[in-house]
Length: 171
Image (tube, rainbow, N blue to C red; front, side, top):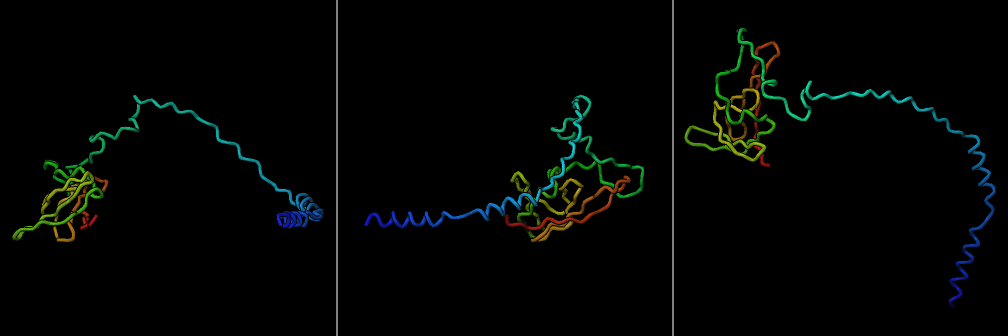
C-alpha cells in the first residue's frame, strides 16, 4: 500500500516529460525576428560647481529678519494705509491659517470669539481687536463665524480691504 503513492507520483513525472522541440524552435525564431531597438542614452549635462559663500548671501537655513519682510508703506500717497503707530496685537504674529475659532462667550450685548493658535493657546477677542499678518481687524462676531477685514498691499504703496472669515471648528 505504501508503494501506490510512489507509483502514481512517478507516472505523473513521466507524463510531464515530452518533446519540446517545437516550443524551442518558436522561441528561437521569435527572438531572431524581433530585435528590440533601444536608442542610446542622452549625454548627461555637464556639472557646474557652485561655491556657496555665506558671508555674501543670507543663509537658506535661517528665516529672513523682520525688517526685510516688513511692508514698505508710502505715506505720501493719499490712499488707504494701515495705522503704523498702533501697537501690534498679540495675535498679529499668526497667519489666519494658524488660527481656529473654538467658540464664543457672551454677556448682555457683548459677544467674544474664542480663538486658538497653533500652539494650543486660546484667546478671547472682541470687535475691533486685531489678528493675522495683514492688519486684520475683527468686524463682526457671530456664534458661527468671526468676520475679519484685512488690509492687503496692492504693490503700489496703497492697501485694499479684504473680508476674511474664521469659522467655528470642532477639531
